[in-house]
Each structure stands twice: as C-alpha cells, then as structure tokens.
Image (cartoon, rainbow, N blue to C red; front, side, top):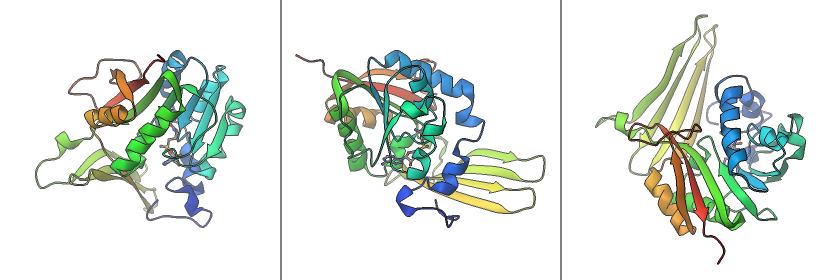
Length: 259
Ligand SMILES: C[S@@+](CC[C@H](N)C(=O)[O-])C[C@H]1O[C@@H](n2cnc3c(N)ncnc32)[C@H](O)[C@@H]1O
C-alpha cells in the first residue's frame, strides 16, 4: 500500500498487510453472500477432488468451498491475510502455505487450481504471469482445470491523451465519500488502482495498488505456454456469454488428458 502504511504492517505481506487485512472482510461488495455463493457454486461444480487456490487471501472463497466438503489448499503471500482463514466456517479445513504463487509448490495433484478477484494482475510482469500459469499447470493432474477471474482492461474508455479512468465516484450522505480510479501505462501494460476515501470529518486516505493488465488472448497464450488450452470463457460466474461488452471474464483452461 502506498500512502498509509501502518506501524503494525509487515513489509513481507506486500500490498495486503495487517492494516488492509483488518478491513478486508467488511460486509458488502465482493463479500456479499450472493457474490461469494455464485463463485463457490461454480468452483464446487468444476472440482473433482482436491483444489488449490492461488492467493487465497482471508479465505473469502476457500472457506465456504471447504465447508461444502471440497478439500481446499491455498497459497498466500500475506501472513496477515492468511491469519483470518481459520476463524471462518470451513476455514479450519483449508491447508495454507505462505509463499509466492508464481513459484511455491504444494504437495499433491489437484483437479482445479483457481485465482480470482483480479489477482493475476497483482503479478506485475509478463514473465511473472507466465510463471503463475506454469505453476498452476504443474499442480494439476491430467485433464485438470485452471480458472482465472479478472477484469477486461478498461482501455476502450481511455481517449488519446488521457491515462486515467474513474470506476467509482460516490459522495457519502454524511459529507465523506469515495473516489476510485485506474491509471494506465499502455506501453508497459502496468496500471495502478487508486482508492481515495474521505471520512465525514474531512480526513482522507489514499491507497494505491499496482497491477499488470492482459487481454484475454494474452492469457490464452500464457496458458498455451504452460501446456493448457481454453475450455470455458464466461462473462461472469453466472456462466453468461463473454461478449465485446463484457467488463470481466471467468476463464477456464485445461491440461491435456493422460495418454
Ligand atoms: C484481492 S486479494 C484476493 C484474495 C482472495 N483470493 C479473495 O478472493 O478474496 C489478493 C490477494 O493476493 C495475494 N497475493 C498477491 N500477490 C501474490 C503472490 N504473488 N503470491 C501469493 N499471493 C499473492 C495478496 O496478499 C492478497 O491476499
């Protein structure tokens, strides 16, 4: 986090240290039960044995999936985030390894590896993202699946000469408010997501997280480099058709079946 690192934050926890983890499970948004349930429904359906979540975070998805009886493992960089998993229903059953999802190996072969909530973009180089695909493939049994949920880069809303796209401007009724915007570098494919939160007393908090964007076609190529091919591309967890107007995608690649 840039701009408001707190004393309790361990730099080893990257962009999701204690001060971020403490509020990560606040109600609403991606934590809304209907949002979580839609994702867990799809993952449970695709799972055919043990599964592995890359960047498992606080167990937002892993814990409810484990509560349904699916054996869930996770890799997570931030100890502060991972510390929250065991306290959730199902969380006790999630086996977590602290490490980098591009390189960390977990024992076993999995039917499904999944990486949700735009987190492929937290790896900010193309080589690093390819390593994530390779590492996913290395954990899969023959015919296993790698699922990624990520936004489509918002470049169609970026006219020449402009590098910033607002995604939320929400004045609060109490005098505070929130402004969120992405700032793109179309040469490097890096961008930052910027979050400005102002409390009713006028105190502001600015949080900035770096990402790298990739078109779906580039992700397909990364999958191919890792020995996988596209099986599904949906516009969302409802498995609706992916179109030119889709703002995100849920994509599933498959490793080759055994000979
Ligand atoms: C937006 S959160 C998503 C957490 C969880 N998957 C969810 O859906 O709620 C991103 C998480 O990715 C983790 N992360 C970022 N880069 C990582 C990496 N290279 N390896 C492992 N975890 C990583 C962060 O620490 C953070 O917990």
